[in-house]
Length: 411
Image (spheres, one colour):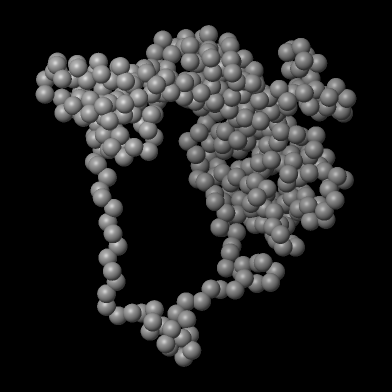
């Protein structure tokens, strides 16, 4: 059928007069598809599905217009013929034991078949600090406090620097602490072992401590290896505030693993930890030789926001997007907030396309509207951190946080 068919034009006029008439719209969509106008057929099918989400014919038209094969008709199960194994099993059940038996779980919940190598250890990754957009201050501090002393073996031996170390990353949620930890592992060319509270805690007495020990035993065998302790405040909470003896034992086990059996036990094991609430972490974990270096990871700066926005918009249909303006209006948003801005803008354009029947690009108006609707997720964190920085900054532990709050006029 030619593109300028009078029938198609007449059907368009009829559909415009009765936009909710699904059969009429589907008839138009089929004619468009026969005329090799697939994009227009997709638009008509999308509007039809908006009016009748469960319509089978509309779904079939959408599938054909998008080039996918039509779903095959559901096959009815064939009646089983031949020997009735189930009846035979019932007849001999008293004389023949089951072919398969489940292995009983020991009363203490331990499984002797498990071993320390069951932990998921990732090989040296390709992510490096250069892949972290912006955050130059964080990179410089990582280089000076953690990476530079470990890159030169000769100088390390000269100054008696052990190939081990501990670093605590803290700051508001969604600002890239886990990504930075992976980048540090990439800089060191080390394996990466991520551990959360769910990986360690167990309902059976003693199993949590054993799990913690197995984590570090695995890291020692895989050295050089970065052990990343996520949500350290859950794994290493202050023992004075912990009412359950099991949690206190986990913290004690973690302290013992950080110290090692002897001076060389943790050679090549680098411990990185992340927390949103460092003031809830047991003070013993932050003593020299353990997690004694601390870096504040703040919401992304301008270059970091631009890199994050580029990343989340790279595969989406956009037009006339002014990244410089978008970076300015998203000041204070975390990386997770920026991802949500891009997702919301794409959703606005998608819904608008479905309603109008015309596919359009994601524009600057969509992104600005999405950014306006997003509330900075870091603000509640800063509200709590402000009191800590003001009244509990013993020994200058949170000087970086105090400086940032003063710069932003939040203190």
